Structures are given as C-alpha cells and as structure tokens.
Image 1 (cartoon, each protein chain N blue to C red):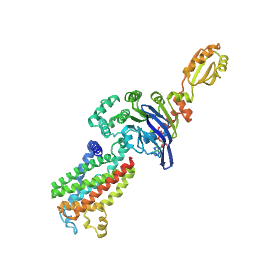
Image 2: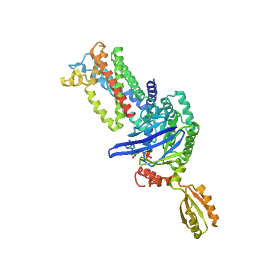
Image 3: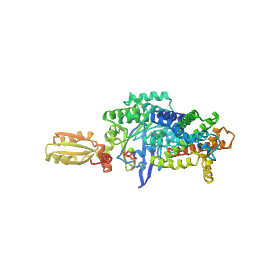
Image 4: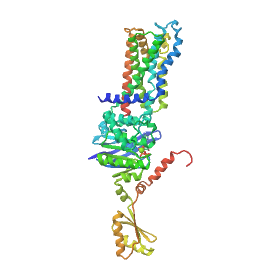
Length: 253
Length: 331
Ligand SMILES: Nc1ncnc2c1ncn2[C@@H]1O[C@H](COP(=O)(O)OP(=O)(O)OP(=O)(O)O)[C@@H](O)[C@H]1O
Ligand SMILES: [Mg+2]
C-alpha cells in the first residue's frame, strides 16, 4: 500500500537525519535520566503524606515521569516541521504523488520510536535505582507512552502546519502544556488535591492516562483505572491522527 | 497534443494591506515537447502561475489541464506526470545529496536501487559527480541549485517546471545547465516550462516566450516573432553625404515593408519587419538609383526592447530595483 510505503520512506529518512545530530541524541537520552537523578531523592519521605496512593514512591513517581515524557517528548516536533517548510522540503514532497497521510505517518512513527526508546531506557534505569515493577505492567505503560507520542506528535505537526511560524507555535504549546500537566497528577498524585481541583482534573484525559499507568505499575490489571487510561490514550491518539491528517490534507491539498 | 492548457487561471491573495491580484486570468497553452519561457519582472505572477499548475496552490478561478489531467479533479495524476523545481530551493541542509535524491525517487514510486542509479547519472550530468555523500549544508550555492534541478528530474517527468533555474549559477554552470535542458527536450522529448529573468536565457533557450506583467500575459511568440512584432529591425545604410541621405530617404520611405526612415548624418536608418531579408533589397534599390552604399548594418532589437515597449519598463531596471531593495544601507 502506498501509504505504508511512503510512511516507511519518510520514517527512515527522518530517523537518519535525527541520528546525525549528536547533540540532540545526547539530550534525548540524558534528559529522562536527569529527571530520575534529581527528583527521585525527594521521594523518600513523601509516602508518609496522608492521601498518598498505595505503592512505594518509585512506583508512583516513575509512571508519572513516563507519561510526562510521552506528553512533552514529542510535543515540540512541530518546530522541526516548520523548519522543513522553510527549507522548501515539504513543498518538494507535496509535488510528488506520495500519500499525504504517508508523509505525516512517517514523521509520527519516527517520533514515537524515539519516545519508546527513551521510555524503555528510563524504566530500565529506574529498576537499577530500586524500582520494582512487573514486566507486563511496564510494557503496558510503555505502550501508553507510545500512544501519547502518536497523539502529541500528530497534534504538534498539525499546529506547525497550520501556524507555519515558530513565534506562534511556542506560546500555543505553552498555553496547552502547562495546565494539561498540572491537572494530570503527573508530578504529585491528584488524590492529594482538594475536591474542586480533583474534579477539574477528571476532565483532563491525561489524568486518566496517568492513573492507568500507575495501576499498570502496581500490577492492577483488572481495575477500571487501567482501562480508562488505555481508552483515554487510544482516543487521544485517534483524535490527534485525525486532526493532523485533515490539516495535512487541507494545507497540502 | 497540449501539455499545458490554462483557461482564465486566476489567483488572489488576501494580505493585511488588502487583496493582491497576483494572477489575473491567464490563458495559454504549451505543446508537447515545447520549451517555453515565462518572462516577467519581479512580482509579475510567474511563480504563482507555476505553483497553481504544479498543484501547490488552488486557483481562485479558472481551470487548467496539465499533462492531460484536470488540475482540480486529478491532482495526483498531474503530480505523477510533472517535475517541479521551486525558485527558493528545496533541500534539507542536514541531509546528504544522494539521500535526498533517493528519497525523492522513492516518493515517485521508484525502487531504492533505481533511485541510486538515477542519482549517480544525474550527478554526472549536472557537475555534482563526486558529491553524493556530501551534506547539503556543505555545498556551494550553485551546487545546491543544481541539486534542486536534479531532484525535479529524478523521475524523468514528461513535463518539468523550472522556476528561475539558473539563478545563482556562474556562466559555465549556466551554459552547462542550458545544454542539459536542451538535451532533456531533444533526447527525451520532455516539455519544459521555465521562468527566467535573463533575457539572453529566454532568447537562447526557448522555442516560445510568454511575457507576463501584473498578472497578465502581455505577449506570446517565438523570440524572433516577438522582436519583429514589437520593434522591427533597424537597417543602417551609409550613403556618402547628407544630400545623398536625403535622396535615399525619399526613395525608400514609400516602399512596402518599410515602417520608418530617419536620417543620421550621412546615413539612412530604415525600420523594417525583417532586416536580414530587407537589407539587400534596400541596398539594390539605392544602387539602381545611382546612390553608392558605403556600409550596411542590420540591428535586431533585443528582448529588453520588446519588454520596454510592452510594459513601459525595462526588465533590467525591474531587476536592479529588486536587488537594490534587498540591500540595506547606502548604495
Ligand atoms: N503567499 C502570498 N501571499 C500574499 N501575496 C503573495 C503570495 N505569494 C505571492 N504574492 C504576491 O503575488 C504577486 C506575484 O508573486 P509571484 O511570486 O508570482 O511573482 P514572480 O513573478 O514569481 O516574481 P519574482 O520574479 O520576484 O519571483 C506579488 O505581488 C507577490 O507579492
Ligand atoms: Mg518567482
């Protein structure tokens, strides 16, 4: 199928370009480890706080960190697309008969692969630090991160394609990212929140994703939390892809 | 068969300062195998027209058939048949030369092996022979331009749009590029539709020229036709002294095909349709009347003269204005 073929071509091309940037490579791998090294020491006492969910600090904190990676890791890929538009690369590809969806998917797949590698690395290092997590639970969480990657990289490309300007994209991302993160319980669980804040957080799909990831880490596979998290992540990915495909098709008709 | 058939093609842009009518209802056709030049000053609408024909920009009004496909109904069909080289370049600085060429080939449905084979052949043709592994940011401006052109040709399209292909090339590379463009047409029968600022380029390269100004086509024809139609050739005959020149003028003024005769010292200047054919006839007429012709010169108008006559502006001025405007500080 030409969508898959074109997506494959773009995926390999984009991956090669990325790997060629050594600075990027180091940052991408070191960043999650820095979070782990600098934030984890704060966790020792926090489990005593009333309202802190069950499980040790690591199994509450690491899933949050993974979801944060999923949210922010690919949120900024739109900037790369704007640069490509400026170089004329996007226009050059638009003149070819290549599938528009393929041109988008290839990029999204590259971003998602990068994210999965980062997530796996982060989990492995956390285990070395003392995290105890069932393998299945870790795999489910990494898969959720992948779905988030698909969603946010798609949305970021759609926004980049639509705005075509770094100066407009940066404030937009900030405006969306900060409340989405604060209301998700990534850093501290929302079970600590006052009632109104907790209610508000329930409207944020990312809060369900975070709860789902924590349930997976505990090995609670039968809970509604995990199901809600998986459904939220899947819906986010579908919506993101749909919006981006439409934007790509309209802007590159 | 027509390779391009544009009917009333129009494009407006909304800008903060109001509506820009970039292209205002152009009608033209380009035949299969033709090499046609689109000549016009900055902002005339050349790029906008090409972008519409290359499926990059939706026309505000009008329609077109490109390579036998309807532009609106079958854009993918159009894309399969055409190549397009943008005015501003189209490469990623971090990519390697062959990487871009092979990806481009893949996007046109060719295999990676075939892409590599064609990349090598095109590099050989376009003076990029040893640069396959080089990163694009390490190329010179001219080398990058030639890579842009190679990218537009890798799938051997039947029709290729070149937007100011020779901008930024040195005279040697330009001559090479002209050779390659001509070869493409002569060997492969590729139809070529290029825009240019260079009068000598349009003159030397194109079978036919469309002159566009303020979004409208103001003239079309072969370079020779255009020059003939607009200004005519100038035949200058030296006849000894002013009195003889006066007699010569009286003799020639009423002849068929003579548009204008003026006296310049001891010479008459005759404006005619086709100077090369008329020169001997005029000389013989003077000879028969007993006026000895001491020297004879035929001057053909340049495309610049044509442009000046049609638009009231010289193309060179338009270019100078544009390049002057982009410089900051005192000239
Ligand atoms: N995206 C756009 N938005 C608004 N105006 C535009 C846009 N693109 C082109 N124009 C305007 O349309 C007109 C025609 O532009 P176009 O690029 O087609 O000219 P051109 O003949 O290619 O000129 P040049 O020789 O400088 O390349 C210009 O007045 C230009 O400012
Ligand atoms: Mg132009």
